[in-house]
Length: 91
Image 1 (cartoon, one colour):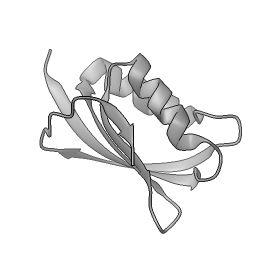
Image 2 (cartoon, rainbow, N blue to C red; image 1 turned 30 degrees about the horizontal axis):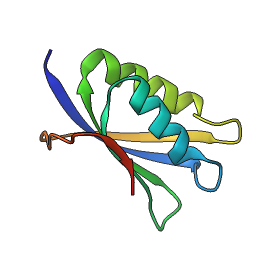
Image 3 (cartoon, rainbow, N blue to C red; image 1 turned 135 degrees about the vertical axis):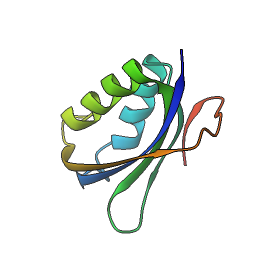
């Protein structure tokens, strides 16, 4: 199955609520590789590689908020060239 790489910028209450750890768990469950990191402007940047169906599920779960206190208001999603990450990690 063809792999895709997405850059996802998460807006909302996504820092200080266990968001990155929740994203890590979801990514591992869906066999998605890449990174997640807090940015200085209060957003969270996710680089996610995986097949299309799993990436769609991943985006749906991000929108729902991976932890009880997370509130996602907007996602900016851009396609990137494949990087071939071997695992998913928190930066």
